Length: 197
Image (tube, rainbow, N blue to C red; front, side, top):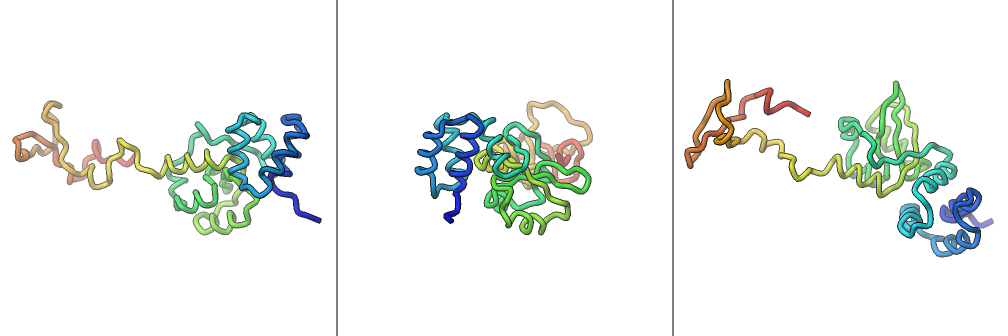
């Protein structure tokens, strides 16, 4: 008996949900027989064949786990940084929240056997999964790990800050640079400028 592909199973679910017609499902099954899950998800959404909410419901039925749209969701930066960025991107997973001894994660393929072993190397929580879309998971992971345009490198925040037009600051040592501008030396610990956020 020939194994059923992801596209075939998902199309069957979408037909049973009344989201697509049986003939559309058969055509998509043929066209995407060997395609990745991410490519198929992107096609369905990109072509407007399936609404995002319907795709989430179908994926939830397919994987037998709840779904979650990570777009606009709040993620704990400290929790995310417990895991290497490359691993999260490669596995298509993002940690969502901790509830007691349970770590909830959103994964593009919650049934991936590598998830438990890879993630278990970094935390000792019991892991539970929800399903999400790969492109949204990747975008969110990158957003947390990649440097923002306004972000300052760790060493840069200790450099001199020009305060020529900012008036007088109390308890700060003022220095003059080559041009005679006043600047604050932040090489010493200063709660106002060096708080970890």
